[in-house]
Image 1 (tube, helix red, strand yellow):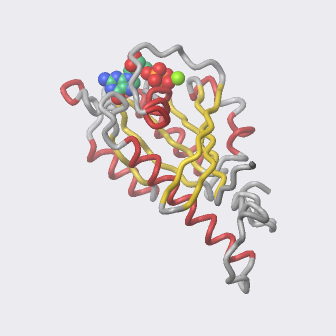
Image 2 (cartoon, rainbow, N blue to C red):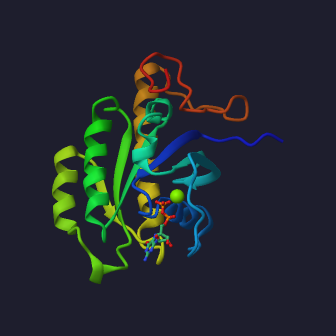
Length: 207
Ligand code: GDP
Ligand code: MG
C-alpha cells in the first residue's frame, strides 16, 4: 500500500569540509555518532519519514561535500529545496567565516527558503574559536534561527532539524492558504496525498 504523507520537505546541508554535516545527518537519522566518516563526495541524500505535531513528513536531506567545492553547481540544488542547514564548527574560525559568506550568497537568490545556522562540535568548548554571542547577533541581523549542536553528544540535533521543518511547514501552510483562500475544508490524504510542496500556483518555490 502506498504510504501517505502530509508534507514533502527537502533540506540541504551546507558548510565547509569537516564541520560535521554528515555526522549531524547520521545523528538525526540513526541517532548514532560514527567516529570515522567517509568524506562525502559531491552530494548524496537520505530519505526519512518523520512525524511532527501529528503530521507525516516525507523528508529528503541532501548532504554535500565542501560547500566551497559545491559552489559552482549549488544553484541547481537550491532551486528545489525548502530549507538550508548552514553548518560551521565552533572550534574553527575559518569555517564560520565561510558560513557567513554563504549566508550573504544565499539570501540574495533565495529569500523564501527557510534557513538555520548550526554551530556544531559544541562539546569541544575548551577549543572554541567562535563565541555564541557573536553568531547570535549575526543570526538576528539576518532573521535566521541559530543553535549550537553536537553530533557527538546529540545535543540540539533533533531540535535543530525539527525547528527548521516546523518553519517550513508553516510557510507551506501559509502558501496553501494564499493559493486557496476559500478552501477551508480538510484534505483527504487517502484520495490524494496533500503533498504541500506541490502547490497549484506559481507563487511556490518549486515553480
Ligand atoms: P563533514 O565533512 O562536514 O561532513 O564532517 P564529518 O561529519 O565528516 O565530520 C568531520 C570530523 O568531525 C569527523 O572526524 C567527525 O567525527 C568529527 N565531528 C563531527 N561532529 C562532531 C561533533 O559534534 N563533536 C566532535 N567532537 N567531533 C565531531
Ligand atoms: Mg560529509
